[in-house]
Image 1 (cartoon, rainbow, N blue to C red):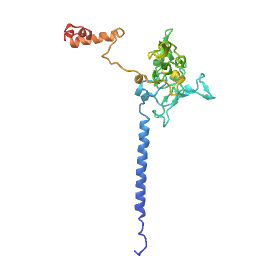
Image 2: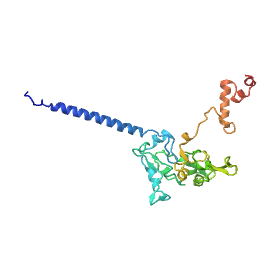
Image 3: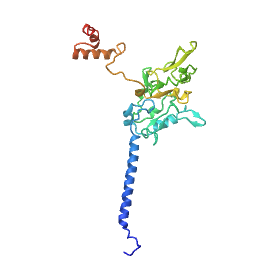
Image 4: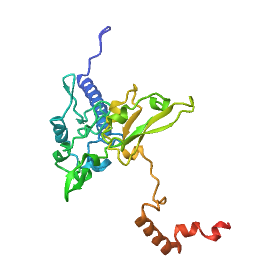
Length: 279
């Protein structure tokens, strides 16, 4: 080889290296995309679903992502408009929403559920992911849809930032609630700072709250001081070993029978026994 000349390039070797690097790059990119896809198709514990939605993974198993509930919501005659734009409650999760892709949900702060009496989204569901029995009641001997039975979530009040708890007059969430004095009610209390005026603060009854989010949508603070969370997130759980004797008689009787069979005495008998008092 003469001085100053470059060695011959092995074209096949170069092509092999280029193709190998391309394959590695495509594999990495595919892994990232697949990871993002899997992440966005897992259960989101904070997502707010339409009325009648089955809980958690049960909903994801039945929802076929057809979008018929969203279409029914958008085409209802009572849909409101804001600045000439339809305020559609339900939307389908798309990439970047960090929700299971293609599933219906809504953001109460932006567009709440307007509590349609005929609940058009529920009958539109072909698979039972939106279960009519969960939003039904008996009227005149017949089962009818009842939006007041919906349990999309539970409203939670941020006492620190709700201005009513500061002593300022505000009842925006109370007035917006479709179940006035049931889901949200006002509790007066003495204002220790002034000693003269009263706090008029809102309280939520989770047994009646439908999770529609009209209160969150109406809240006047920059970040809503009342917001809707899924029921299992918003509320605690006492556990089966804590019982309400004045409500769950059947469950208590069953528990007592098991207790007598297994331990020879009921929990109440044990707690009231003289041996325990003398310990």
